[in-house]
Image (cartoon, rainbow, N blue to C red; front, side):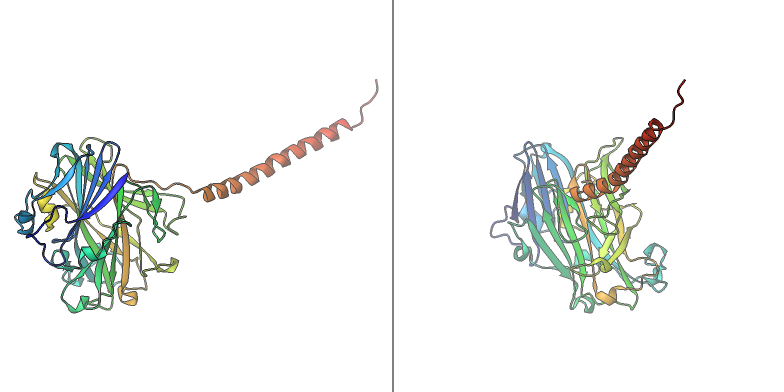
Length: 376
């Protein structure tokens, strides 16, 4: 797959975006289809994925309407008849709560223990042009509020696109392919509003009508790529009354308390139940693209574990990673090293048993043949 990156496609003078606002378009060209990823920080940051059955499909933006917020239908992928599937992942809020009972479970926490949430649609974001790496297919987005909490801190999202199958080196080392992208999210240096503060991340998925979503949790016997983590969570989208998966968000249930984590910096994370939302989130990208009564669902990812002695204030850092892609989610498989170890581990005892059995059989044969036989 050939992958190209552009910033603010088709934007020409005299039109200019507000400071810090940008639209990144990543185009993955297949043999007979195209996969478009669009990342935008106007309003709540959102990643839109559009799959078409044409190699000629293009993104068209009506910039005057997009900039002036009269944005319904101002962003299209043409020809529209080629669009097979569309979905968007929108980061809407960061929740902070005072975990006085140390349960690390916001679902069981009293409402009075929650601080007012951080509304990401109101954040001020960094300039995407300064962090866009066209050769590395990455872009970083950092933002915050004009409050004391974010005086020396920020919420950051790093988007990565891929041309082939592989894994990132840093944990959780999710297994990606050319049909997927990755969002690495971290909260760094933010001053907590309590001594026992923990955080949860709210995000919403917006998609075409006629699709239904669910969250599956799969187990594995292998933790080679993400030590001590034997599960993977997958928020998948399927056509109604069909079993095939058309799109997904995939993550390991783990977060890290350091930018360069070691095993001791890992902490579990868990997701809430999937909830249907009555309206689409305040994202200009989503509002510009979806016009035909899309479906919106949301869930929260919370960090920490019951009786966890480490709170956010101890490191002032937490990170989490999710894959966003088309088709069936990538599945972990055993590496060559693990296969060799398993083969040796299981094969050696079997060889010993077989050799031992043959040795005993030979001894018995010899003993029987050398025994006394009377002469008639």
